[in-house]
Image (cartoon, rainbow, N blue to C red; front, side):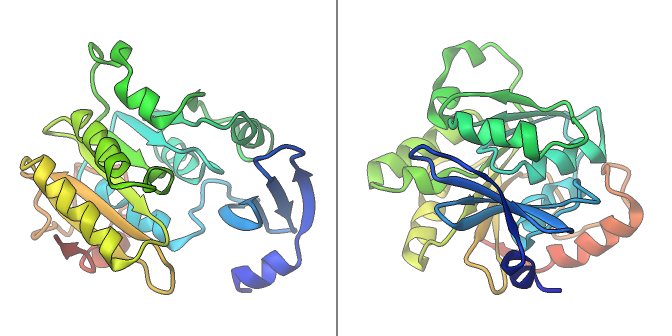
Length: 255
């Protein structure tokens, strides 16, 4: 059954009574989180770690190349990526930075049924990125940004966010940015700014078929993106999944 049909059969589980307008619905197979009646995240009830939306696969492509130790995700949502990473390898330290207390509460009550050990910091993404308390800490080896749309209201704010992301990006770490529902001009602007801000990483991106998302990756320059091995010892993915994702990776576009 297509996701749209599941959504039409959903029942309301939770509705916020404040300005955030968060609602949670479910049927016998899925539970989903909505902001202003727009679906943000979908969880498979029987297999909560399962990825359910195409852009999530594109966002996780760096797993083909390395075994992350610490992943910082800016924007928690329904926690799909956090649940997947925690289930993939419990040794991965997952940190989610989320401003909305309602979203955090919704995740803890409705979207973390297996009680994965995910650290959640209740603060704005820019606050976390610019927090001097993090300056003497080991930087994350993977930074995932899912809040770009909240900072795209002006050119200055776009540059401010992207600069802060690059400032937190080590040479051997990677950065992933999800751009939802942006036109070609906005996407090209983001890519141009990223190229101007750094030269230590190779930039690739994915168009998500039938969806509006563009997923951008900044990958360390030494990663062999043009010569992926048939088998790899530097991945946590099981072999069947590695081979499937390896085929999907060929759809990337070099910026």
